[in-house]
Length: 227
Image: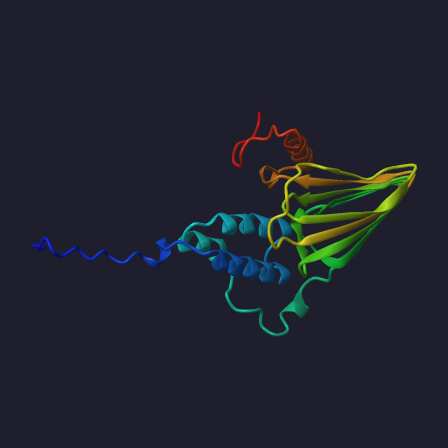
């Protein structure tokens, strides 16, 4: 029996139950960015896992974010076997659509003349910490789709037209990739849709509807979709 003068020695807490620090979360975010640059994660997957890392409370929570990713850098020469990056989207008197997984170059260019480009960057693989998207529109325009947690910088001009940004006014997450959009329009314009997490995996029509709800603060929490 334990004497009144002695206190029982507490059992050690399992490593997985230990609380994580900000530095551990930051290290995981850096690892995720590196894996995305090697083509293992799309932009949407990167943002989804980054959100999980930022909300992780224990080391076990944090470990689940990277459990299917290698801890070591890619072997030498592996990057050379990747698909060549996409650099141009062109729509002349018609339309072009880019959906699904593809590798994006650090500079993406879209040319729309009496037509339009629709580009879903959620499934894009980005090589670094962001990319630059140059949009040129003459009597046409482009529609761009992005996760709402990335950092978006929009510049350029529109003559007899306009460029607009739609979706929730969410602040970018710490360390998020930066997408620089330079839009130049003549009698046309471009629309940038920032899509909330609830839109992951959904068709573009439904994704736009959720983004519109988020504009008016009518979107329920993640995991709950409106009827």
